[in-house]
Image 1 (cartoon, rainbow, N blue to C red):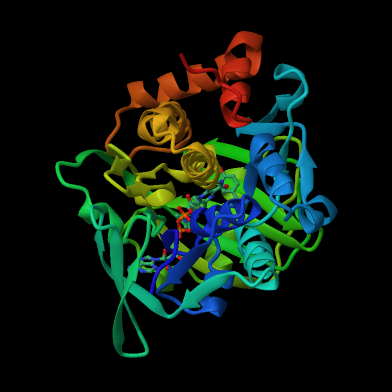
Image 2: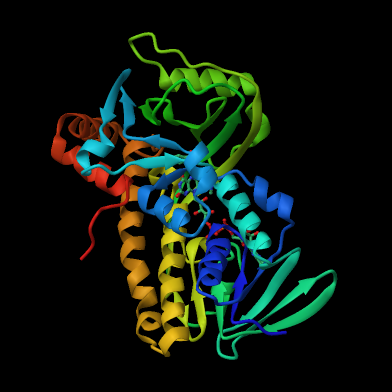
Length: 387
Ligand code: RFL
Ligand code: PHB
């Protein structure tokens, strides 16, 4: 069996890469260990940078996103019982962000690939990658197969196998003493813009999915058991963390899904070895506070598709050689922003009262200073320049 580009993982990175290559006439095979229903239901990201939306539109999967996505022009920082708006669009010369769930992007990409006759193999677990041959082996229906190719794209997330095939990998990692309890609830959002709340009880985030479905997050201990969080405890903790002095009310409703995720920062360098390229969460993880993970995954595969296209077009290795360094510039900018937002907004149990007063001083500065708010805004919408 042979293809031009063998892609390990049908998350947003692998699926979009397959779509971008298809639009340039380059064939690929996507191998995914899970089944289709699982991949389409996995609750994750929701906030898309404008650049991400534009890439998805150019890839031919923008129609439902344009109909159902919610365009946002600002976000709210809430602390000390008071709401402060960061005017994202005003501060970034017109940029917006869009709320559209990762589950829907994955569904749209799978539909587009299958309609065009694309080859996505579900229940196909990649066992090993040979970056030099290049090829990969995978198991499907109890049988082991080898897939030969020109290039392998390792898009198999943080727990995938591709990264282990890069010799001499340098890794950079930081763990945080907290996790997020994510909640999907069947209740109209109590806000039009995202609320990032800092309180003495810990961080909370109010996001949304549609006019009838809310997405909420609570900072919790990373080792906590989800069974210790019955629905009424979740709602009362959310109410306490979002409480304001002006009587703002949080609507509650049936919880459809809840789960706890640990938070970490992680980068693996370089993102290429020989004919193997790592992209998305396979190469880097950011804590979700800055909403960068999915946006970085999309940006990596956009760079990769251009590089592979140039190679097939003219045999030029220039963009392929530049792939890792090009992606890592943006990755490290996002790493800094995500860890800054995380330490700014979470209550660190190991920190003393001096640390908490500093967090409040910084939040007040963001609310009062256009310069400080612009720093947050240009990173959040994804237009912070790099050298
Ligand atoms: P994925 O989505 O993890 O997909 C990897 C795929 O590879 C498969 N796989 C394998 N397949 C074959 N063989 C193997 N050996 C395999 N091993 C694994 C897996 O089953 C899976 O299908 O990685 P990808 O494509 O790089 O996409 C990255 C994003 O999913 C991730 O960065 C974001 O979800 C992060 N994130 C957010 N990002 C944003 O940009 N904005 C947000 O608002 C945002 N919110 C979030 C988030 C992540 C969260 N969690 C749960 C970690 C909120 C949360 C709570
Ligand atoms: C989400 O809608 O899931 C979301 C939004 C913003 C974040 C993280 C997650 O920072």
